[in-house]
Structures are given as structure tokens and as C-alpha cells.
Length: 263
Image (tube, rainbow, N blue to C red; front, side):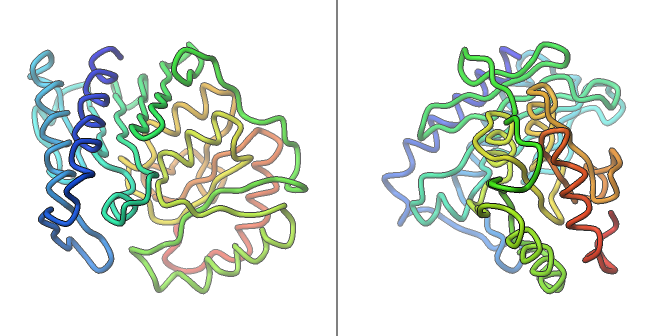
């Protein structure tokens, strides 16, 4: 955990330092509407260097560089060096670094660091969740009435927008409001802290979810895929919410699932 926190804070410092020269950054388009910048790459290199200095035999899965290290290791780090790249490149102050560690396929440590607000969300399996040094819990919401729900558009799979819009409309008819802030890791952290009463999204990657999913669970919440199972890391479709809100969210989402949305 100490290594993860240190690595996240170093990456956050890179983000802050480079904010003053956004117009000078080199930006590449990985896929339609999906970008990577010099800052993403520098943050990822810094995090990997921090981990490998102490754990050279561990496996590392990172958003930009893929899987490196020992693929047979029981230890796998899952890294999103800059979650919210579009926000960052537009000068919107809402982005984070996300680092998780799996041991034998189980998430055991998770860190999400927001360098703008200097908020560090963290959790270790069985030890609860923290925001900086303060323990956090999911909200006590029991229904969608008066709930504030976080979400994200399926920008990588725009063919799924009609199904997603149907889900969105169904939620909008039941809850207080929805928010689309552009950083899945922070959305999950906000569920853990009770700032959001739930979150759902289609087509995420493991590095978008790993740390946040553990932090939500350690804050007393539930994390499932769209089938109500534990396969969100495989399907990329995730629901995170307090225990009593999850069944209502599943009931809202499932009638609108279509081909291409596994669960």
C-alpha cells in the first residue's frame, strides 16, 4: 500500500506540473475519441518504475503499455496513470491516478488519487476504506428516490448509445439526477465516500475499475456486473451502490440490455 500511495502521489505531481503547458503536449489518438498524451505516458512510466524498484518480478497491467513483467506472477498491479485524460487536456480539473494490486486474482489494495483536490482514496481488503486519514462509508440510500447517480457514456462503443440512452431515461424518471463527470475511478471513489448513491457504466477496462471496486466494497457497498454477478472486470459493465440500491439499479438496466452488452 505504501508503494502504491507513493507512486500515485508522484504521478499526481507530474499532472500538476504539466498543467501549465497543455498547449505544448504531444497528443495521440489511440482510437476514435480516445486519446493519450505525454502526461499519461510520463505518469505510467513513473508508477511502473516505483513498483519495479521494489517488486521487479511482479506482473503489471497498465492502460498505455499493456502487460509487462512476469506474466506468471501471483501479483498483478492494475494501473490507470491518468483517468480522465480528456478532462485533463481540456483543463477541466477532474482526473485521477488509479492503482490496484491483485494477489492470486483477488483485489487486495486500491488507491485513487485526485491531485487537484489532494484527495487520496484507499482501501486494503478487510480493513475498510479511507479518504486521506478519514474512514468513509457508502450512503445509506435504500432506493432511487432522491438518489444522485453517476454514469459514463459508452464513448468507445457508440453503437450502444441507444440502449444506454434507454437506461439513462429510465434512471432519470426515478432518481433525483445523474452526473457524467468523465473519470470512472473518481465516480467509484465518490460512491465509496457517499457523494454519489450509485454508479453504472458500459464497456470499461480493468484499470478503470479495479481500485475503485475494492474501495467501494471496503466502504460497505456492492459491485456487480449487469447480470448481478462478479464478472464486471471481464465484461466491463459495472454497477456500484449501497446494498439495497443495487437490485433497483439491476431492474432498471436489464430490460434495456442488447447484443454487445454481455452482462
